[in-house]
Image (cartoon, rainbow, N blue to C red; front, side, top):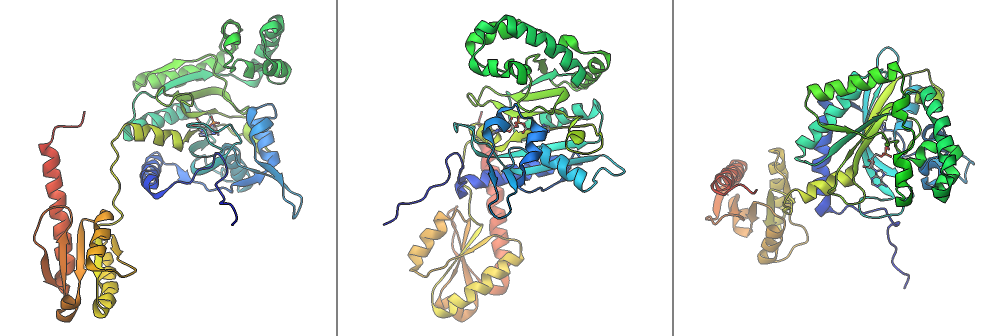
Length: 439
Ligand code: HAM
């Protein structure tokens, strides 16, 4: 016997029990994005490796050690499974001249791939929803992106997600800061770990992002980029903060935040929660005014964010009691050859009325079929036996409240079914009102 095969480590099957919540979240996300005028962009999961190397930066964790890159044996192309989709979005915008004439607000939702060490909230295949505002110089659009996030937490009933904000200025400002930072780091070389030493010259800013406890005091006292910002950068940063103040969105400035990708300038931000353990960043983003040029386009200002769906779902699951979702509203039980044939027509007819209907397949006794009907979560069973088939009728049994089974002419079945479903909903509403609120 051959051994059983398993999914790739860090890549999860999403089983139907959980997929119901995924679908609910995806629907909420799409209507939220549409309400801000964002339109969907769908790019390939595979891109030329050069795209991510150029966009994300050679000296980042993602490019150095987390990309699923390979050479296509059939034609020698160097390809990479997308670790994020900002680079793909910009590539597509340039390739299809999407910004000709007007700026664009675009969104994507789908799987991303990073070869990280899997743990709770961190996977090798994970899902992001991302919004990218292309062709906007801000700071109004930066602020709008932050308002969007705040509204989503509200829509999803999530609290305790805190906004951290920073400005990393312009490339020139960073260069000036970098010179000072390198000097400072060299003066403290004795406390630098191997990673920091390696990055001292390739990407010193990232040293400030280290979690190594031995380095925290040194990092705390390092020269701050925020102190090197010129007038224009400060005005942009002020502009973003003004809107947050006007609209009452609390935030804190984190001068150490640098983000894990190199394409950012000016505004950078993260939304962080303490309720998810070590992987508490729910959303990250910022401005990337240099990226279009970096991958061969015309200079184009842009800003965006991406959120991890697994992390959002983690928070949603924590904050609500879970009930198994019903598979359907109506379950059709049938026995006898005439009734078996009638079942197809009855089920299709009920679907014409917009109902979700599970038709029993595979035969079995009435008793066994009724057990399946109950397990499906359906509210009603439509029962077709030899009697019903002979008289052109159908029986309807309520599965959730004690009620007489009724028998009606087939022509009356859709009405009877909708009425019973409706009555049940009404009853639920009443019983909900009669109960004390959950918290
Ligand atoms: P990022 O910070 O690398 O930014 O990822 C954004 C979010 O994706 C994170 O905050 C986290 O919620 C989720 N995430 C990242 N890696 C994993 C993982 N291994 N497992 C589970 N969730 C993960 C970007 O990707 C940028 N493209 C965001 C952006 C858009 N900036 C501008 N526009």
